[in-house]
Length: 140
Image (cartoon, rainbow, N blue to C red; front, side, top):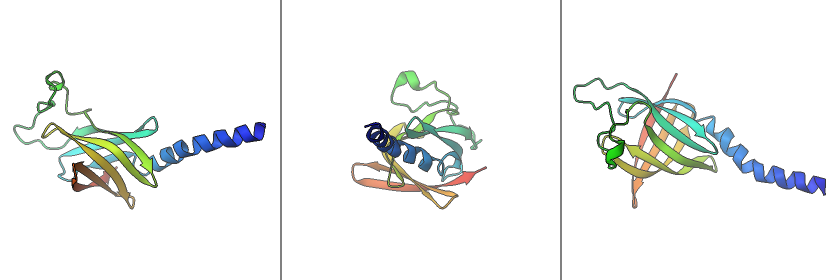
């Protein structure tokens, strides 16, 4: 009976353990496709999330706060530290069912993440059936 309980417990923990192990390939700092920000990807419990770690765009007029957020109370949040990727869960080596928030437009999208090799991350955002993929680059 004890062996059966141990096997059941191991079976219940395996998917979570696999998800957390898979996150190791994604965790770290990533340069966005436009080269304007570095996003820090980390585990958030059993899911994966990302925050803006650094803004590289020093052009005049680049907002320091989340001014395009549809929720007025959130428009004073700093861009640095802003959560932009959240809720991703691992399935068969892919991170799916997440949400990507674009502070440039103030819109959120259904999203997925796929690591390509060790240095490339495919970030796909979708509205209805229209999807767009961007490639991010790993940073030290």
